[in-house]
Amino acid sequence: MQVKNDLNEKMTIKEIVIKNFNTVSVLEKYNIDYLFNGNISLANVSAKNAISLTQLKSELNKIFNNNK
Figure 1 (cartoon, one colour):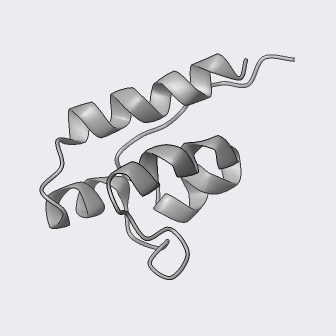
Figure 2 (tube, one colour; figure 1 turned 30 degrees about the vertical axis):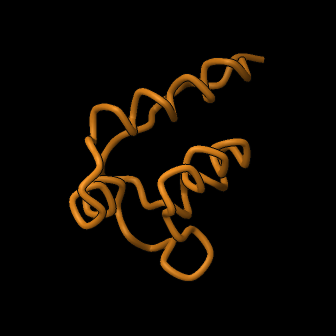
């Protein structure tokens, strides 16, 4: 069964981790707190931590696409 990859910048960190726990490795790489601050959107966490949203989405999408 193929899962649709609908990762977008409005998703919260918590939603991303729930969809694919393997994304934790990327979040930890950028020191993104997914346990206590998981209700922050991908766009907000990117801006707050001065991380390129494009780069972050690209790395997360690689994980989503590897698990199809």
